[in-house]
Each structure stands twice: as structure tokens, then as C-alpha cells.
Image (cartoon, each protein chain N blue to C red):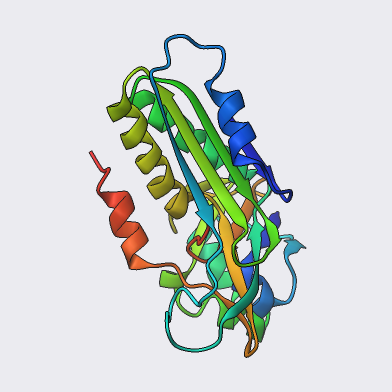
Length: 154
Length: 83
């Protein structure tokens, strides 16, 4: 299931709802991403981040996330997939993304969750702009994220 | 043709969306960029380095030789930074 929303979500409630009703599920892996309070490109330098705004491409976002979910389901035996991604203005410490996978065994749950985050970061059309005391700055994409996605090439 | 810009491409061009009548000779994403660059300094600046630009046709990633028609939705944006 894919959800793209401005509102916050409750990870505990999401996890509880995600894990009920399917007796074949033996393991769930969940990743929760938060907004950091420093500039991702220059940690330790420059201004702290007061907030960021996540822009996205409505329609394409859902389409690309659905494609990433389909790829994960093709690669691992999954009983359920949940991707929640927020957009709009977010402050440090706020939840930004949740990915959860459920499988009969832990290995598939761990690997597919990792895969979903790596692919999501390079394929889902979101862009961060950081609001700092020194002005607004679009976040540049990182080579490390491309490398992380490529480890799943086959 | 419906042309969309996101993130700093939108900032440089000044609008997020343009509905354009594109010359018949413009039949690929790459040719569209070459034509868009002639429209304003902002367009020229936004498309100065195509290594920093991604393109989608009808919400799927494509390359610079991908065919386009007047009915398509074409979007330009920087490499993504979500998650």
C-alpha cells in the first residue's frame, strides 16, 4: 500500500494494523526516517536547518512508489508492503517516511525493506529544500544514494 | 503540450507549468529542451547542464531521445532527494 500525505502518522498504530490478520506473517521489518537538524551536504558546517519543505510530483510519485513496491514483491515473497511518505513543511525530528514489509521469514523482510528505501531514494520524485538562517537551499542528490541503489542491480 | 518543472528548475524558469504549442520539428525530449532553451534566459539557465536534469514523459523516466507528441505530459526536474 502506498500513501503520500502531508499529515503525520503514528508508527505504532501503523505497525499494529499492518501485522494483524495474516497468520502466515512470521516477521515484519519497519524503517522510519526522520528529518535531521543539520545540513545534509555539509554536516558540522554552516547553519542548522530550521525546517525543510518536501515538494513532489503528484501522480508520478504514487506511480513510481507503486513500481518500486511491485519490484520488491517480484524479488521477495512478501505478504504485505506499506510505504508512507510525507510532503510539505517538516521540522527537525519529524517523521518523514515509513517503509514496512511483512514476510514469513525475517531475511525477506529485512532485505526488501532495505531495498525499498534504497530504490525509493533514487526513484520517487521528491525534492527537499532546507530553510536555514542563511536562506533556502535545495538539497543536492548524493552519489552515495545512487551507489546504495545500484547494489540491488541484477 | 503540457510541460512541468519542479524544484530549482521551477525557481529558475519562474513557473511550474507551461502549456505550449511546440513546433512540429520537435519530436524528442532532447529537441524539446533545445527549443525551450531559446524561450528565455531562465530556461537557458535551467537547462545549461543536462547532467543535473531528469525528464519524465507521462510520469515515467525516459532519456533524451525519447519521442514526444502534443498530447504528452513532459516533466523536468533535478535528481530526486526524498526519503
